[in-house]
Amino acid sequence: MNIHLFLEMAADAAPDRIAIGTRATGITYGELLAMSRRAAQKMTEAPIRTVTYCGLNRPEVPVALFAASLAGKPFTPLNYRLPDADLKRLLERSAPSLTLCDADIVKRCEGVADIHLQSVDAFFAECAHRDTDAQESGAQELAESTEDIAVVLFTSGTTAEPKAAILRHSNLVNYVLSTLEFLSADESEAALISVPPYHIAGMSALLTSVYCGRRIVSLPAFDPGVWVDTVIAEGITHAMVVPTMLKRIVEVIAERNVTLPSLRALSYGGGRMPAAVIERAMDLLPEVGFVNAYGLTETSSTIAILDPASHREAKASGTPEGRRRLSSVGKPLPHLELEIRDENEAAVPAGVVGEIWVRGSQVSGEYEGRKVIRDDGWFPTNDAGWIDDEGFLFVEGRLDDVIVRGGENISPAEIEDVLITNSQIDDVAVVGLPDEEWGEKIVAAIVVNAPVCIDQLRNQVRERLRSTRVPSVFVLRETLPYNDTGKLLRRQLRQELAANISASDAAVG
Amino acid sequence: MINLIAGTRLRSAVCDMEGIVIRQPEHPAILACGGVPMVDVKNPASASAERIAQAEPNRALIGKRYVDEESGLEVLCSKQGLGGLSFDGRPLTLKQAKPLPASD
Image 1 (cartoon, helix red, strand yellow):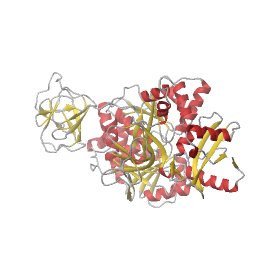
Image 2 (spheres, each protein chain N blue to C red):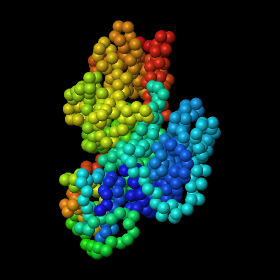
Image 3 (cartoon, helix red, strand yellow):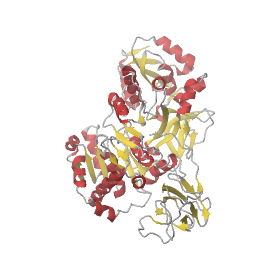
Image 4 (cartoon, helix red, strand yellow):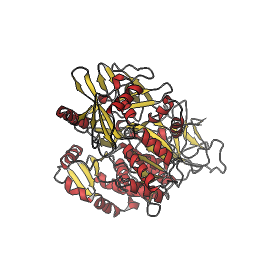
């Protein structure tokens, strides 16, 4: 099955429903299908392998995605925020391609061989002149092989050259079919998409919204004030954000003292959510159902969710174990298998930290030129995690970030969770740095808004966790490094801290 | 007989129901709606069968998935009509799926 089928079904069943844009000026599912067919026709005529997209979130993104699917060309959204040289490198890897760019990005892409470069506006202006009637009666046949590649996303490449993660039609179709019901949204529902197109959540939100029949409103680029304004003005019912976005949204809501009466569901993922932020968000937006969604690009988005009821139970819980669930990612989706395994790839019991492995039809586990998924379908996520005795999954970050001190595996996340509870600490990251005696030592980088007593912080970690978890060095920082989708750049931080500490005077404690 | 592969779209010959094959059956047989073989969705010729006037008790509902355990066939109802689905004479059963909260 091809993901374009979702659009055909929605256009057949609800042709006059608004698919994309504002209630006043949006385009309907019928129009979206016609636009997609016209664009697909142009794409099939060009001698290209892929369709790359380089620009902000705008209504043309879903059109280009569905058109590329119909044309049988992998859709490859690129991060326009990359430096020119890196962007060109990704364009070279995707060539020969049709490259659609925002007008101000066209110049930055010039000079790459084998790309047919066009501004998004110019491309769709040409498409608009096509004869739709001829097109529709000609009824393009879908590329039927389910193994065809639907979407290629370059991983953020914080560790090395970006990897091209491959998502096949079968992966995305199975994700959508297994998690949602066709046309289950009522006509008042609208989803606000504020993650960029090159993020897996941006792609999956388009597919799930179309399949449910939910109107899509795209925010060109994230701004917390504009986000709040748009939710109110457009009657947004569903939205997905990354943790840093929620933190800023919460600040705006508190500052303006507004409510978001239309908002029913707010999901978040793509990084660790500080407990203080989600608790504050729940206090400020008591009517909203919060969903923590955990997933990876390589798994076609979500593989585990903490649902709204579990959020409320955890927040109201009287026990530390119960409250701790607020920082869990909930339970694996029922159509998937999920296991925690040790370094010998043997499953471990509840409560033990290991690597998260997952199996299911939505899991691709595949990069250009390399398959990580095993022959039996199991995919090692490279994420560290554990499951509690009631089946709640806790993600502790990348496996490579686990600190090994004196033979003991220490998760940075559990120490960060303790330290961030201090009101003087705005942000914290814990990393391991080489140590002659212990192999690695624990270093905490903290951003503070008021003076802190380091000894007190040490005591706190010792009391809440144990003495082996106490950071040996605390470093005060102005900020911590994040990428544009809110992922902490731990590798960069580790390098900076290593340099910092060897210079020694920035270190305290 | 229509070859039922994943992605095949069909329409009822006796009502407005339309469906799409999600999983193909292990052996070929006839998929029927309202007891009459379904036709290719693009088949413009209205079937000679008489249209049904009343909803059947096992009427296929929009958005729901229907399965035949024996053959593995799974069909998604993409447009609602009046008829219920059967495969090789066996009525398809509703696949109960617990709806998940929106996550993206």
